[in-house]
Length: 124
Ligand code: HEC
Image 1 (cartoon, rainbow, N blue to C red):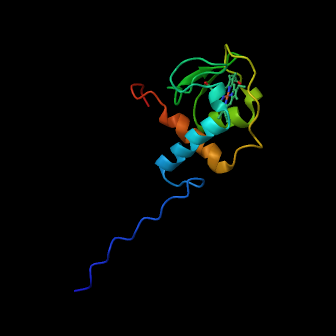
Image 2 (image 1 turned 135 degrees about the vertical axis):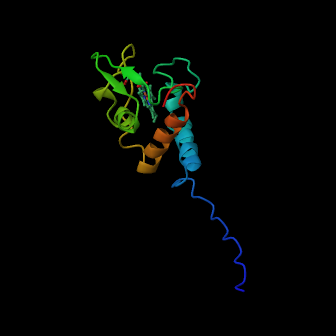
């Protein structure tokens, strides 16, 4: 009988380079607080300078040029890197670009965080 191998200890995840869904969401939440997204975006549905992130994931969003986009990873990434490319209807073009300020892991984290705020009652 071979000896029973002890379960390999799980290495703690580097919070700045997360690989798990939970780690990505946590990093995105830290970016939201530390990069100042929270001064213009709420996560509870209330309006600030910009739209709340609560429940927007997977939903259609109407833009100022009357086109409609779906809030997905590509749209969120574009909104962060090139905020002037797609202006949400009813909001001022007031968001600065964060292109030079977010590492790829942080960008992926924000996307995961916004996705985690999806309205569970809404269809996928
Ligand atoms: C100075 C205020 C301000 C800050 C700071 C800011 N935003 Fe925005 N953001 C806006 C406004 C206003 C809009 C809506 C107009 C537009 O589409 O650009 C917006 C739109 C967005 C959208 C599209 C939302 C939707 O409902 O379609 C995303 C995603 C977003 N911002 C992410 C971020 C992230 C991530 C950060 C922080 C790294 C951030 N924003 C920081 C003002 C801001």
